[in-house]
Image 1: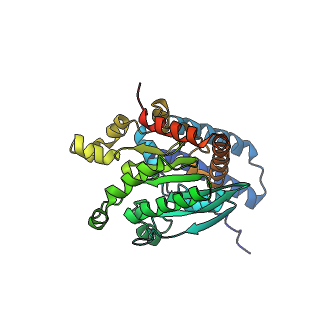
Image 2: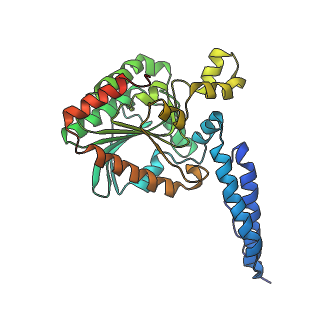
Image 3: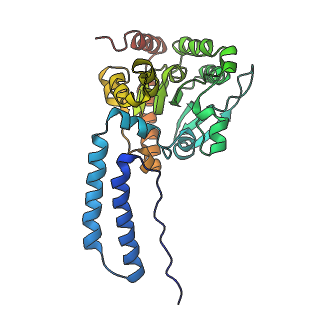
Length: 325
């Protein structure tokens, strides 16, 4: 007698607070498998469980603490820039090198298209596999990465193409070599020159927005965050180590830093929150790609009619007065 084919259930690297959700998902998958194998109608049992699952996801993710949101932003299955390039763009042509030292894999740049909207895309690249993550320094760019980003932005300016940056970094790479090659100067120069680039710039934090590493490609006319991303001058662990001399205080540090999208929208540091699928972007990367793509198109259409001089003045005022009462 042939064995019944086993239905594979999705495997997730879950966070602690996701465990009840995954247990319920597993139960639903087992019932669906049983119904399929034996031709039994279990809709009466499965339906209520699915309703309970949906309610559990909504309740869990609506009540996350700041530290839990940091954990979601770092989720191992959260979509990264390569996922958005593959799932959101209709066309992408990558541009390499800073024309001075090398090609930093932690920064990706290239000409991109969504529908009829064409722009330059610049983003932090974390990598997917262990090998890629190591090659990309886990998204921590070196000076040549920021120089590459700025050089390509000036190319976009020359061709009157708007710029979209996707921010996802724990911070700029802190190694000795990076400091010797002018890490602080490269970031400062990017901040200065992005303030004056004469095309629309849209900056979106898709995961981690860490310190100067994020600001190096974070000056724009629209600054937005994905719902469960975070944006902070320092990581919660770093803050806890400085203030309390203990990493155990990282949940308190995360709360004090006001690093969530809701906190930063209230402080006028960001302009918009991009909603994530129920349970976070890692649960439905395709839906997240569609949502983010639609938002980028919306921002581009808002900014295109604005005269250049008005755009530059508004950009300057935006950052000059940020978070002031």
